Image (cartoon, rainbow, N blue to C red):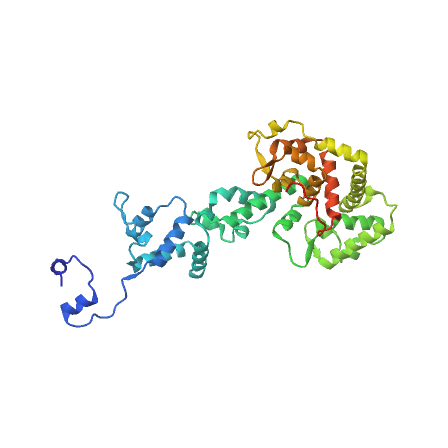
Length: 404
């Protein structure tokens, strides 16, 4: 045995020896006992997950917490980076206990560790960043934060957990943006209807508010009362006692409403339910758009189209890098057109787009020109013409090559 080891044993400076040295000292095998050291892989995974879930906490902070050290005492980061393969078993136990105290059982912890290992670390978002969106959804729609976090919100509010995955954060922000849009466009719409459109409704049932106008139209136009369709008085629904009706009842109301409108073409548009008014108006708009597209395809219409698409600046100005350029295959998004409709417009006006386009391994259109088109008053007519043409254009029918 090394002399230094014997010296340290005599002066009680070591707490353990190897099995070989134990046999050398005592002449018999060492008694069985619980291992004091374990592989550190599981500990390091839990430590990394804990640090990511608790923004602002460092490895040094966690090390001092595990070993009960003061803030001025040195730390050993080798247990975190794997330079020390084995660790004290108690450290792994402490890490598991920390998750348990946060309300995360073993099964859920293992699931989190698998997901954390599969996701890039950049895909975690601080909880504080998405909290305003959660508060907005709760106040406006009554959507509980736990239902969208897929985790108890109390764990985040108390600070036990501080980060959420990128996918959940993006979904929360998307729900908030969609809610704002719905409330802005349909200010008088029932919030329950908006909530159902965002997070789903009750299987087999339809919101009463979704068929209220159609039911009122049937009651005013026919002799059938609401009880014929609802099976009860509408008082319960109008006063909030019930919010949904069975799907088969809703289908019957909508079918009878559409049948009555078809059989009574003389009914004024103003008397129709709002949803049916929009459908009738859309038909009229479709006819007008089709007629406009037909006129724009005549000789005078083509000349009008050329004037709208005609560039307003010189080629030198368009080639100025100050204004920037957009790849040809992305220009349709800037103009708010479908790709097929945009391709048809370019094919029919190839000489104009070639005069302003720039080729550098691929075709680019100047941002200045695209901004001009968006601002032009009658460009919407040109866009509508080619959107209509794109619907009727066969998928297999080739488009004349232009920007190739």
